[in-house]
Length: 293
Image 1 (cartoon, rainbow, N blue to C red):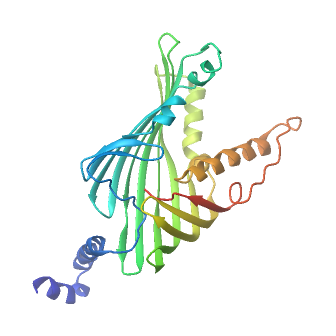
Image 2 (image 1 turned 90 degrees about the horizontal axis):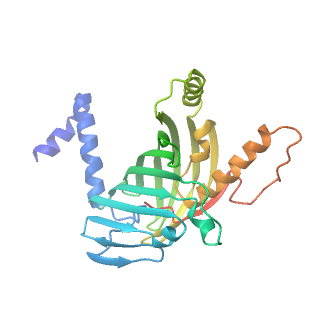
Image 3 (image 1 turned 30 degrees about the vertical axis):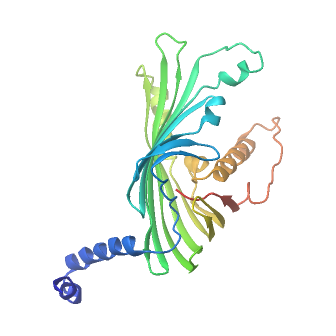
């Protein structure tokens, strides 16, 4: 009763209004019943999926994708569910590009390794038929050349995320509007370089790396692990990290071809790049699968 009385008079104080808005937010997180975009935790114990294996302790699980190990992508993923409507994930990928050629009898010519350390927090808050979904992630990506003496390291730290407003026409479908943005935080080398040209390059990169997108579309959740998303991208601010936008495999494909187009537009006149136009892949209207976290 005390809490209800406070809510009736919340309009008299901005501080109380904010306090109770947050209280309502977490209340709806607990009682929501719509599909949402977070993959359900696995039952406790060992589990096997199409591409991964792992072990679950209920609200915490660890997994790996062995098929990627064969291709030289050594990976592990840790997931924690503070509640059923939010998830924290940390994943590590170390890529050995020299492994694949050895399968075809080719000698390993260089010792180069790439990595990406990714951590994100995703919240799926629902208010009846409406949803609010903030997502934030930080990546540390880099390359090391181990055959150098001493080994040469280059790494960058960058962040991206979005805020999404949605509406559920049914329990398994959702219309949404998403504002996504990304920014480069830092670039470092080891051993530390004092090269002024490199420092100027890093500064220019930081100033021109940020991007902002607006996405409109719809989504269908067809099982506990997957969904289909159809939408359209509007570019509001075009920076270098636009080629790292998105959060699904389809986005990676789009980014690859978008980068090829960028190379084509900035190439010398004598350089020729093929024109590529794949519906729903290289276009601003897109179709993606497994758009869940």
